[in-house]
Image (cartoon, rainbow, N blue to C red; front, side):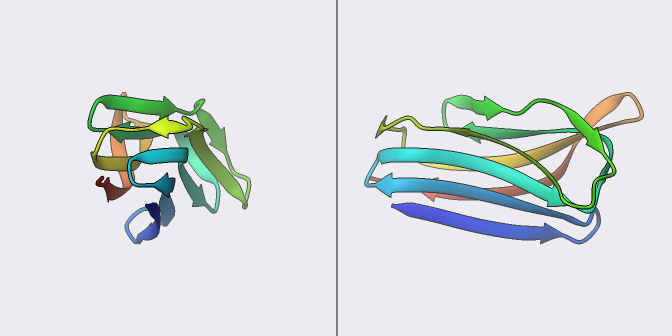
Length: 108
């Protein structure tokens, strides 16, 4: 199984990607990331799976035109079958909200 999917959130201008590399349930890499022409508010990337949070990035705020935020793990073992999502969380007005999301399904 290799899952590589990116999507564009037109409301926020964010491109969000979810990538899983492996075969069957065996995964060598699980990665989620987002790009934007500058993140004006604090954001962090989270990857979730059927058993909860897989990884979380540090929070960044930047006006950099090539801003990328993401997290990744290299499990090199079988992972749980189910849905994995890359989510960009943005902090604004005192709370975090889902700014962009992309998901893929892992099956054995």
